[in-house]
Image 1 (cartoon, one colour):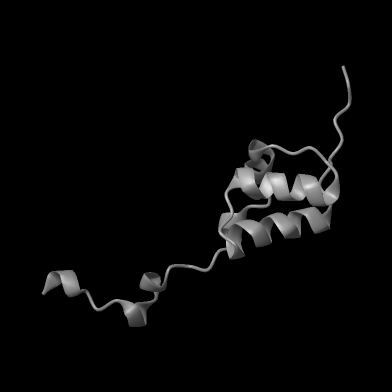
Image 2 (cartoon, rainbow, N blue to C red; image 1 turned 30 degrees about the horizontal axis):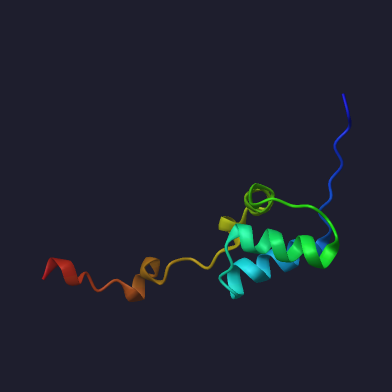
Length: 77
């Protein structure tokens, strides 16, 4: 059995987040860019897994509709 090593560096993770969040890149597109820039071989599933592992959802900005001051309950009128 071979030991798997983590190929993710902080710079690679930041670049992946930047590509997906700021540039609206797909996971496949982000994998291609990072593979080219850092000289590693990544797949779209590697990008998806990394984003999931760093719990991207926990750091997301909450929906503005959850704030009490933004709840005008227009659907009840």
